[in-house]
Length: 117
Figure 1 (tube, rainbow, N blue to C red):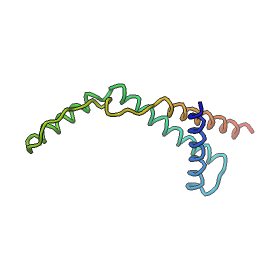
Figure 2: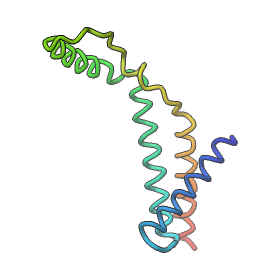
Figure 3: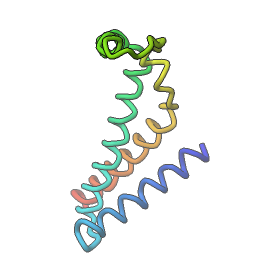
Figure 4: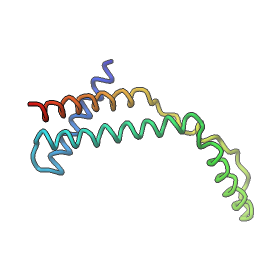
């Protein structure tokens, strides 16, 4: 819980910083937009990592590595063992997903505040 809170606060600070960098002033509308970009990017990165870790791209990765390995054998390089892509990518995805979802919830609350008040 503490890591999620620290990550969410860090993400919101990043959103505020990026709002100042790109818009030169902090308005609620610009903050909502930037929070959407940061949280959406974090959620997208987490979901891509999740798909790769579950082995969806293992066959394609293996095929490309095998193809390049055959081409390198013609050049005289030695054969090496080919690990699965899901074994190579090992990032914890649950924490970043929860941080992205909590930032998205804050963005939705800000959006409701913007439209109804």
